[in-house]
Amino acid sequence: MSNEPILRIADLHVCIDDTQILKGVSLEIMPGEVHALMGRNGSGKSTLANVLMGHPAYEITGGTIEFLGEDLAEMEPWERARAGVFLSFQYPQAVPGLQVGNFLRKTVQALRGDDSPSAREFRQELNNAMSELDVSKQFLGRYVNDGFSGGEKKRFEILQLLLSKPKLAVLDETDSGLDIDALQTVAKGINASMGSESGCLIITHYQRILDHVNPSHVHIMIDGEFVKSGGPELALAVEEKGYEWLS
Image (cartoon, rainbow, N blue to C red; front, side, top):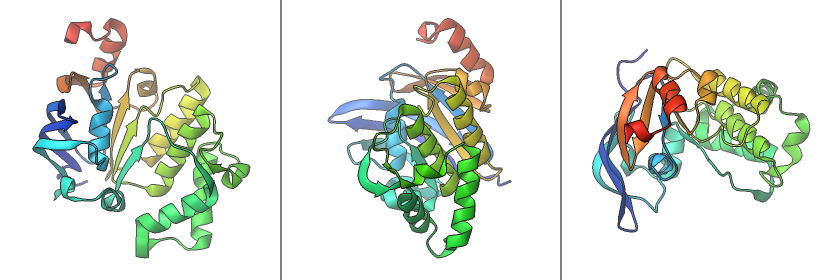
């Protein structure tokens, strides 16, 4: 296991339309670590996720973001994905006319380039991932997120995660709207994607997914700042007391 962080954020300030959203966020994720980020709506959690993936609407006004020792802010979104950053969207968009199977194959080819698996190897990887998430073969013939239920969208995000094999997975409220069975399946996929050389940032409102994906670190964000960090016990305290005691 490497002693160098996968992600190092130092004193990050971010604004959108001249409104300051992030106000000095610092975070370090080492290989093998799962970090959970919790906070109320509007606290800046999704802003952090979007900035990590390079959303053009957000402007970094201070601080640095390093991914595997490189300046992440200097990379285009596709370069970040190719380098090993994965973002699971809170609200995945539908792409009518693009079949799931073709989308997944092209995604893997684009991400891995010369290291792309053969057609046979890809089918094996795909079958294994679909079995892990209890996804039927008929799913491959549907159009991307078109008419998907909430649970199907989240399963599809985790299916992409398993096939992408990123160094850093950023999961933005992947647990929202899931019943307990779907939640356990998604958590199983997240756990299967984690390795000793990768890291994960789970953004969530709730403790319940953390019952299945054990975080090494928990951070609470209020009004664009980390107000407290700790271990899994911090998420339990928030579940019991809410956020008022941290304000």
